[in-house]
Amino acid sequence: MATTDANNITTTCRTWLLATALLMALPGPALAQATDWPARSVRVLVGYPAGGANDLVARAVSARLSETLKQPFVVENRSGAAGTIAAELAIKAAPDGYTLYMTSSAQVLAPSVRKSVNYDPVKDFKAIALCASSAYFLTVHPGVPAKSVAEFVALAKARPGALNYASSGAGAGPHLTSSLFMAMAGINLSHVPYRGDADALVDLVAGRVEGGFMSIAPTYPHIQAGALRALAVSSAERSPLLPNLPTVAESGYPGFDMGAWWGLVGQAAMPDAIARKAADAVRPILESKEFRERFASQGIVPGTLFNEAFAKRIAEDFVKLADVVKRAGITPE
Image 1 (cartoon, helix red, strand yellow):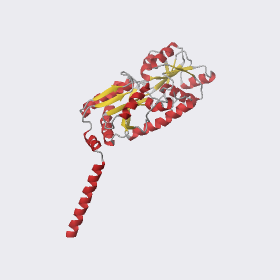
Image 2 (tube, helix red, strand yellow):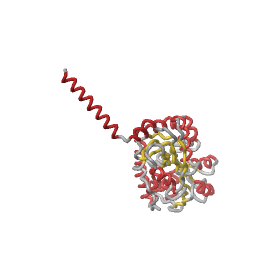
Image 3 (cartoon, rainbow, N blue to C red):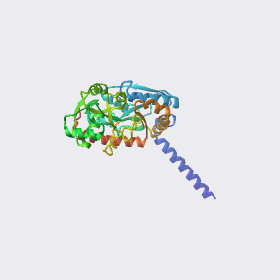
Image 4 (cartoon, helix red, strand yellow):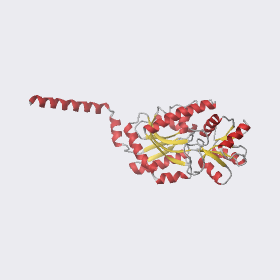
């Protein structure tokens, strides 16, 4: 009996020592952060000026997180260098959950089109939640005699290089989307880059360029007014704004899926427990009717990917976009 008691005491001691050693192996601050986060205000970096889609999504999510987690989530706009300034600031911040970053597909693309990018979108960040996404409309001027993707492709093949397409800038999402479409369709269109959607739409509506993949929010009113004609949407799913409009994939190009997205991340070394707690808090926000209806008129839909699933999407898009850049012959600047 005494031997049994001694063995039990020895086992208990070993278990206690092992548990103590494991706890001591965890950095004190990290252990506290994982259980107490957030204990103070959280900064959410946005790489673009106030008013853009990235900023609006960040503010909508941050406002609700402030209510849910009982600490201020403060959006800080640090625009410049196509959003990369904020990304670089984010990775230099302490990985304690108090500086988060609203990244985007543009930041995943950036290393493929810019020489001076000092971050790795896959390795330097820990994914929390893909918050929202939006596609592009393949749009033409009403003077273009094409009312479907098939007719537009046939017209482009009949007039190689003669049709122009607008984009919001060289290396931007619409440019890459057009490049992928041309490669899959086997056509050659002449690229006319602008400084943004607004400038591109001015010339498209005026008929100075024939078409292009354009962001949904600024383009939709022109389609409603009859100033432009939409032929397809670039995403895998149809747009709720124009449910009868087919996708490019449905129009004869299976697998075609391009668009913009925005998501919340932290630093790579941020504790997993914080990333999961943040994701658990963001999920009901994105699933709410309020969030969906707020952005519906802009063609922005809530995200459904969290933690590892979002990290997988980032890694896949990094490879996919780099391949599109290569196929398009775009040289990093």
